[in-house]
Length: 286
Ligand code: HEC
Image (cartoon, rainbow, N blue to C red):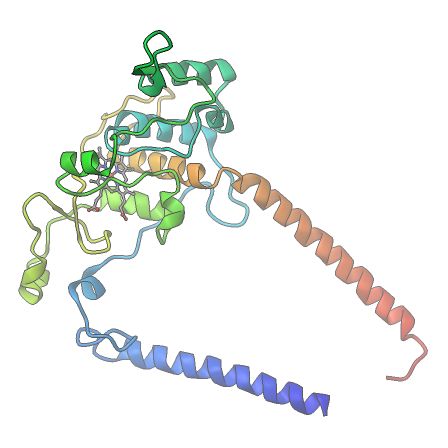
């Protein structure tokens, strides 16, 4: 009886997997320009949107670790380039100790920001003050209206968790900022309506192929690294992608270590359970 039920459940699973595989294969083999594999009509996005390229970050994979030197370079790129438009409002200055800065260095970084909102104690008027390690990175724009006004009606999103919020994470950020390219004549012929409007920029890694952000990294040496690494556009993009992977997932290393320990523990526990099973059923015919 139990075997019968187990068989039916197993057969049900197998049927669902086979069905899904069948439709994936049929969809991929079909005329992809007319329809996507889900059956929806093709659009410029389904035909020309590109999947992120790998940035080859040290944190990739189950044994991934952060390269702190790279994270510090990435922070420098953020501070000197991206911070003109993007906030990092969920990161506190003291969190930077996590990428290898000493407390004194963190204090100096915090103090280099002098736009932390405050109240003048003598007059009660709104004022600004220098940062302390306990402060978070200040906002770049007072609100969304100001952000839109300065950015061609688009809002630069906060970057604290962007690598979690986008498929591809760090690879996406890397691909996006190195992926600006002219629209191919083939694409324009097929979808004339996708022609980049004035003020936007063509980028096949962005969801709708035209993005309001101008290419932020344009030339080698846009930032000067202290550690001798050559600041090519590709390198700066990788470094800032690594940094933004860290801001969104600062506990990645401890999580990987804990996961590894848990797997070892489970392997040992499985061995013990198997031994116990053999022992208990030793003399019983089954
Ligand atoms: C001149 C202002 C400006 C600078 C400098 C800038 N950005 Fe942007 N960024 C924007 C705007 C505006 C958007 C919103 C684009 C849109 O919605 O079309 C954006 C969007 C983004 C997005 C989100 C894309 C998405 O999928 O929604 C990421 C990631 C990003 N920027 C990363 C960066 C990084 C990394 C840097 C620094 C190397 C940087 N930006 C520098 C203005 C800027």
